[in-house]
Image (tube, rainbow, N blue to C red):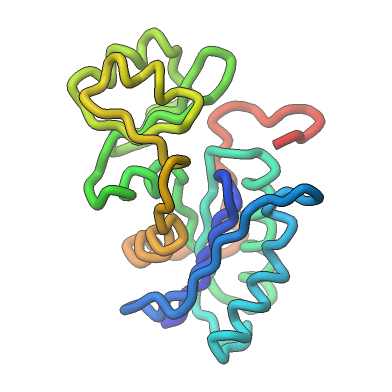
Length: 205
C-alpha cells in the first residue's frame, strides 16, 4: 500500500511517501521571501513521486493534515487531497494537526496552540476546542505539553515542561503518514477541514 501524506497547516510543508511499512521519501519545504510554503505543494509532490520511481496511479491513499492551523494551509491541504483522490479514484485520510503534534516525542502529550483572541486550541487525547488562556493555564498544570513559540513562555510557568514544536526538527510528515495507517479511509467528498474557529472573511492564513 502506497500512502502519500502531506501537511501545509503548520509552519512548514511536509510531504511523505509511505509503503505501509517504511518511509520511502520525505521532503520539508520552508517559506521563502516570495511565497508561503504551501505554494510549493503540488510541484514537490511531483518531485517526490519522481524520485521514488512512482506515478500518481501507484498511490492507494492520500493522507493530509486537516487543521487547525493556517487557514491558507488548511485550504491547500484539503483541496489538493480531495482533487487528487477524486482524479485517482482512491480514498483519503484526514488527521488533526493537534494529534500529529501530540506524537512528536513518541508519547501522547497534551497539545496547546495559539488560537489568537486570548484562546488556545487544546488536545488531550481528543480535540477540546478553542479555550480561554486563563482556563488553559490550569489545564496544563503538572503536564508535559507541546506548544508553539508564541505560548511557550506563558505556559512554561504552569506546565511541568513546555516544548515548542517550532524549536526542533520534528518529522511531522512521517508522523502523519504513520497515523494515517491507524485511521479508516473515507471517500474524498467526506474529507473536511477542521475549522475550530471560523476562517477570516478575507482568507489570510
